[in-house]
Length: 144
Image (cartoon, rainbow, N blue to C red; front, side, top):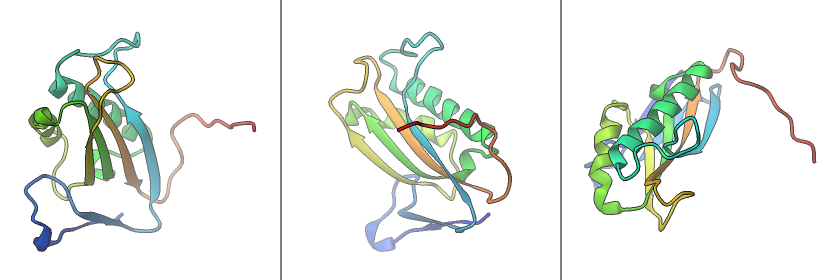
């Protein structure tokens, strides 16, 4: 599996991300829904702590990737939603513990509110997994 980071010097790059990421067409893509930091009972994990919530979310993403036969190194795109852009340093510190070059392409938005008022971060991801192999998850179907 080949993942290649593409960056333009003319855009500058002072963040741990890639301007674009190229993957081999034979790779499987895994789309991870936007996740927030929750405890098993559905309550918010670490209310008020953006860094701890980011870490919890990335740990959940890491677990989902493991079930699909991958790791965070397979993530090619992240979309991060935060409730306070002034606290993105907390998000960046947590991300730095999970990602090494080549970094995924990344977009961050500030939003007024997430599903619950004490949730401060939501992250969705796209990962490129090796093209061969079988699914390790639970299959489901949807009736129309």
